[in-house]
Structure formats: structure tokens, C-alpha cells
Image (cartoon, rainbow, N blue to C red; front, side):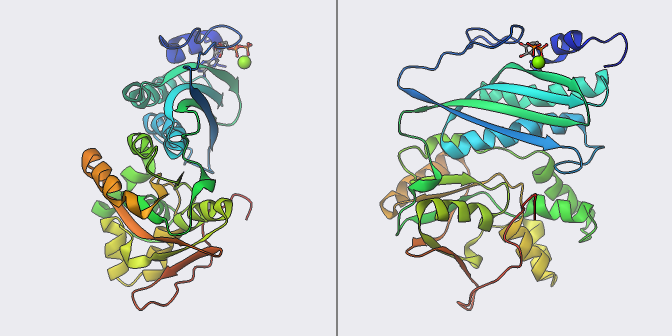
Length: 324
Ligand code: ADP
Ligand code: MG
């Protein structure tokens, strides 16, 4: 840490907020939490590493937002109500202005979700941001990856491809008109986790996952865990405007990759029985969130993506994998 700023000052200034729903929050050797009777604790952790998950010059406010957003998204995908978080930081230096912006972005998203920061760890090292999140879900009601059934409809929230397209632009793979980049950048830097949708899908969906590594990779996890296959229609996928215009400008392969294998969208993909179609549509109307039926679960394994002519579309890589 920088001389004059102790680790404890820094935690006190930037990361100590009231946590009224915890028995004990930041400041002791451990936080104390009480789970409501009849509830299960959903626990998940996600780490953001400089250069791998964000550019080293990233706006700290947006980074604070995204560090929490990706974790809220995991709660959404389980149908869990997010409650508490732990925040572990490795920082190259104790830069006050950076920490102020980072914590402002973090709490700006935490507060409307009723999520309380109850602890963490702060150490010097290459910039690394790690959140552990805990949420509550009624016993047996979690939306698991292994619950999909043959015949289920497959649904997707929002639109796909914008975050991956913004990243491709920053990496120089494509050149977007400035307005298109601005539209996509919001998806990359400030994703909105679908927490309300996850909660609404309890008792309606058979399975769910959030799209962090690309639709085919993430839907693939549901299929594998559930021991089934899927057929989806490429034309049914709801895609962001910039991705659609790229498709029409003839950069079809890049656009298809953003849509089918692009990461960082944080939309929910879920399966639900056909009898729940009206219920899903009612949720879409109530949350003012487009939910699109993109295909169905079938016997077998793997996912077939049908093009407009009925033929299968093939991609080289189905999603992001840190070790491939
Ligand atoms: P210990 O030495 O027991 O590991 P620390 O000195 O690491 O304790 O942390 C002191 C207190 O501050 C603990 O309650 C810990 O949970 C909390 N804390 C440390 N870093 C953070 C952070 N980045 N955000 C929130 N709480 C933190
Ligand atoms: Mg510690």
C-alpha cells in the first residue's frame, strides 16, 4: 500500500457500509449471516483479471459495476435472491481516486439489488477483482442446469452479440461506426444482470443458465447436465441492432460468431415446458423484457442451429475457454 494509507483505512473508507440484514458485517474475522428458515444458500464466486477480463485502463466505476454484475448474473441464473457479497481485491497501489470510483460503481449496483457487502480481503498485487456472492432460494426451487426435459421450449432474454462485437472492435477484428460501437460498449462495460427474471422463473422454468461464455457453450452445459439435445433456429435469435447491421454488411461470419459464441452478454437462457408458454409471456410483459422462444429440447446430445434454409450452421469455436 502507498505510504500513509493503511489497508484498514482503505477498507474503512471505501468498503465499509451498513449491512443491516447481516448479524455481523465488515470488521471482524468473519461475517455472521442468518439464512431464513426454509431457504437454501446459493453461493458463487467470479474473478475478473486485468488483461483477461478487462483492459487495464478500464473506467473504475464501470469495473466496480461489472465485478458485481457478473456475480449477480449467477444468482439470476439460479433463481436466487442475492443477499450478501464478499469482495477480494489485489491492487497494484492504493490509489484513492481509483478506489472511490470503483466502490461507487460497485455500490451503485449493490444498493438497488439490496445486496450487502459483508467482508473481503485486500492485498497488494497485480489488479484482480473477486466477488463471492450469496443468495437465498426456497428449498428445492433453484433453477439448475440439470433440470431440462425433452420437449421443453428453449428461451432467451434480451438480445445477443453486442458485448462480443464491442470487444471485437476494441481488438481490431472489426471496425464499427462510432454510434454502433457506443451502443455495443454499454453491453460490454455495464451489463445488466437479469435478477428479476431469475426470480420470476422459479416454478416456471425447468433449467437456466446465464450467457457468459457464448450461447452455444452455455446452452451446451444445460444439455450435457440434463442428458438431452437441442435444435434452435438462427433466425429466431434476437440480436442487437449493430450485430444485425454487420450481418447485412456481409461480415456474416464475425456476426454469427458474436451471436452464437460471443461471451459477456449475461442474458438468461432457460428451458420451460410448453404448457408454461403463456406464463413466460406474462413474465416478459410484466418485466418489460423481451423473451424469445429460440428452439426446443430434443432427445440426443448437442445443439443443432438451423439456418433459414433448414441446413445446420457450423462454427469453429462454440464459446470462450480460458485454456483453449
Ligand atoms: P484478516 O486479517 O482476519 O484476514 P483483514 O484485515 O483481511 O482481516 O480484513 C479486516 C476486515 O475487513 C474483515 O472483516 C474483512 O472481511 C474486511 N475486508 C477486507 N477487505 C475488504 C474489502 N475489499 N471489502 C470489504 N470488506 C473487506
Ligand atoms: Mg484478510
